[in-house]
Amino acid sequence: MSAVLWLLVALPLGAGAVLAVTGPRLDRWVPAAGVTAAVATLGAAVAAALLRPTARAPLFAGTEAGLAVDGLSAVMVVTVAAVTAAVLAFAVGEPGTRGNRGRFFGLMLLFSGAMLVTVTATTLGPLLMAWEVMGATSWALIGYRWRQPGKAAAADVAFLTTRAADLGLYLAAGAALAGGVTTLRLDALPRAASPWLHVLTAGVVVAALGKSAQLPFSFWLSRAMRGPSAVSALLHSATMVAAGAYLLLRTAPLLEATGWAGPLVAWSGAVTALALGLVAVAQTDLKQLLAASTSAQVGFMVMAAGSHGVAGGTTQLVAHAATKSGLFLAAGAWLTALGTKRLPALRGAACVHRPVGVAFTVGALTLAGLPPLSLWAAKDLVLAAARTRGTCLYGVGLAAAAVAAVYSVKALWYVTRPLPPDPGAGYDTERPGTRRVSRATPAPLLALTSAAALLGVLALPGPASWLRRLVGARDEPSPEAWELGLSAGVVLAAAGAARWWAARPAPAREAAVAPVPRAVVRGARNWLFLERFARIAVAGPVLTLARALAVFDDRVIDGAVRRTARGGLAAARLARRLDDDGIDAAVRAIASGARSLGRWARRPQTGLLHQYYAQAAVGFAALVLIILLVR
Image (cartoon, rainbow, N blue to C red; front, side, top):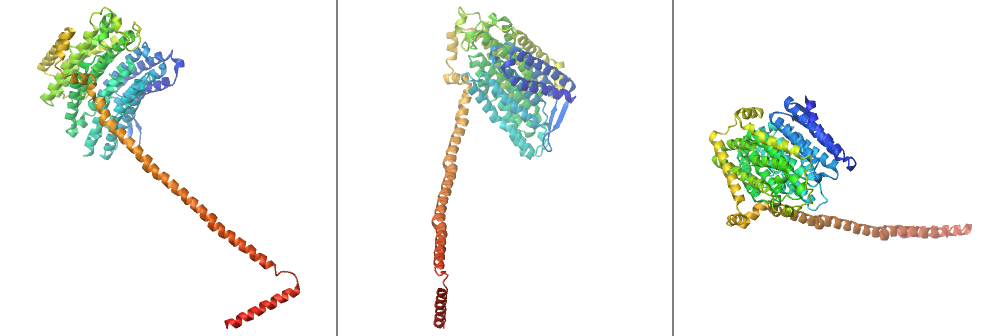
């Protein structure tokens, strides 16, 4: 059975790698090949979910790379593969993906394959590898149209933000080894020795919150909107942001083992759901509204993980994946057709392009959490788990659900308004629109929105019990009847109030907003100035430190090296002078003296016998004289 698991991850990774390097020569055949690979991956995912295969391979000494499909990952692999297939089918007709289509479809498959490895990994080794591949491919996809101004910068911001948080996983791996978990198995992490258990948990939490765009990392999701619509649909639904929530759901026993991590994660999710929901309400750009709502909806998953509500969090994740991918594809279809994503300019868009309008309407109502649609069921499961942590957490979650209804109804109100007298006056703010919707658009849209609506059956007692057994959460609480009624009433009241407020004349709406300080409104529209704060509090000091270290390197370290080199050159020159003027001069003097002695020694050698006798007599006399004087 392990062959099915290897096939599940090898299909998207292998096909993606091949397509990514084909170049533009095969652009005609790339979309069909990409969609075929995605559909085949979906078939492998269904087979893996039924067979539950496992696979192991040696990695390092004492550790292994483990993959397995259990109840939780069975749900995830089918969700990831299904959304990927639908998004790639949509991308076939999207002009924004044209250019080097092999690179686009290849990167999308690699991105999806990395997510499949993430959700099936049973050890930290393959999880880390897939985590890195997901970050790298997301950077390449967000900046796919890198020649256009701002695209590459947006990709850099998203990558650096998530990359900084990803370092928590390396910290967790090191702490696990130090704490005695040498196998690095995820299910063994709660058995790490203290204090490494707390360091390990902190690393996992930081990495997960960063990947899932929770506070204070949420701003990178706004930047990610600069990518193609198909990228936004996949990144914001079943991959990337879902990866962090999945990791927290998978490691829920680890959060419980520390005592402090569970409440921290639960409150992080609840505050993000409420704060980013208010950010979504303030947006006038449809994709920015959907992006902020992604952070808010993922906040419910994080709140469920912190409350040990694995079944509720899983339901929220699956329902949100179907809902949000459909909404982003609808927004992308309107952007292609009308050239704008500004809400005031999209008045009547649902009436002009009816299949897209129907899909968006169902998706928006689902996102609002209205019964009996899927996110209504998921939300109540999450709130039931949150209530076990305390009434305050439950209240914040309920308020966030009300805000979700407000921003969903706001988006829906704009696109379903009657067309203005001159609708074209507001079009083409982003790029020239085609004024038509591709024939490849309706099928994936309707499939995703149908799933978003029908997954509400998970609220029924039978399916809910089955899901709890599937993910191994039999003891999780179910929402009481009064909870179902209360949440439904709050959401319906919030939706009605939002609809009434939106229908008021513009002066009345402006007068109603007037008491709210402008700084608050401006802060909400600018994502709470999170990116500016990150630049001031993190990027600024880091760059200042980097410049100071560069100066220190240039003036101290490099200066010392240069001074050492100059000293060496000076010593070499001195040695050369000593050699030339001292040693060489002495050698020359000795040689000159030897030559002089040689010349003097040649003079007595005349060859005349009487001179030799005379020289001998003189020498004998000198010797006698010396002996006499010495004595």
